[in-house]
Amino acid sequence: MTGLPSLHRCVQLRDLLRELVARDMKLRYKRSMLGVAWSLLNPLAHLGVFYFVFGFVLPLNIPNYAMYLLTGVLAWSWFQSSLLAATSSLVDSRDLIQLPNFPPAVLPVVTVSSHLLHFLLAFPIFLG
Image (cartoon, rainbow, N blue to C red; front, top):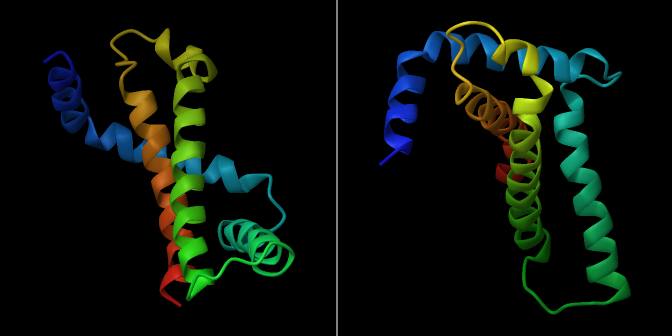
């Protein structure tokens, strides 16, 4: 039951969460030449490589293989990037943690939320 008070505290701090997620999204695309388009190109590049390898080099007889593959690539890339970034978010934001009354439990939530937005930007590829 120790996770529920932290979750309740995160709900209370939703304005802080919103601002930190917006900051994280701006920082992510600030140094990128392609900006938000990178959210679309990265999963498409992964899809292209996997489709070539498992569609032509080592052919698999799976109907509608591109959609099957895209589902897994999008979900896995979100999970992998969220988990990797959330585990290092406390170390990366040690200057924020040192502030008085700053709840450290917010940082992994911000990181996962930011990566969820990144995933949702790439999701229209799946629908198209």
